[in-house]
Image (cartoon, rainbow, N blue to C red; front, side):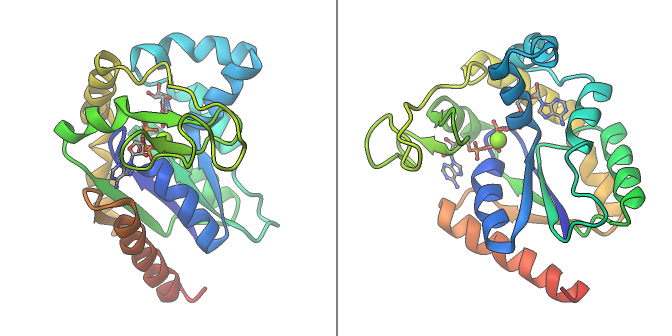
Length: 221
Ligand code: AP5
Ligand code: MG
């Protein structure tokens, strides 16, 4: 089972991907987490992508395609994958189709979390993340047990540098201009299913779990 989680910034892709990957034993591949890890490690790649990320623009296709596709499970590995934040352009989507085909795999499902723009700014400005495990919290909706501290790692939670209102608006513009057209791309292939991202995180999870489970059942896993 290989799937993509699609949706605007703050839709809940990371929140749901972590839970779904665990429930269905899929490899969680988050393009944003990969880029943030490069930045934390101070690599040349991390430095190249800094200005794009901090301004809310998409990183160039050639860079992100290489970063993400090198992490796809190989043909001999049993695990499927859950892509979160990739693809975001039609060029990326085409490169994913090709890489999966080269690995003897195919895309089975594109699950889109729908959330209106006006809710997104509040979600993103209240988000805190764990710098060790990339765990996602929200100061009101999904707070950690102890304020400011990751439940799993005990690490101090941080605010992502691109989580300001001004940058979120740029990220939304990039989403509507460059990523939203993927809906048509995947609908044409019969892969797109929408889930209402406006419910509680647990209700969204229940809905996504049913959609993924049904699709797995259909393909006979
Ligand atoms: P990335 O890290 O992927 O950011 P994003 O797409 O903007 O998405 P977010 O991570 O902000 O949101 P999310 O949907 O994961 O929501 P979350 O679960 O955290 O990308 C960052 C940057 O990297 C990009 O801007 C770009 O520069 C670059 N990049 C990455 N991939 C790229 C690509 N393919 N091509 C080019 N450039 C790329 O939830 C958000 C908040 O809401 C949290 O606080 C959470 O607790 C809360 N929340 C979640 N669900 C709910 C709910 N149901 N109700 C209430 N609150 C909720
Ligand atoms: Mg995310």
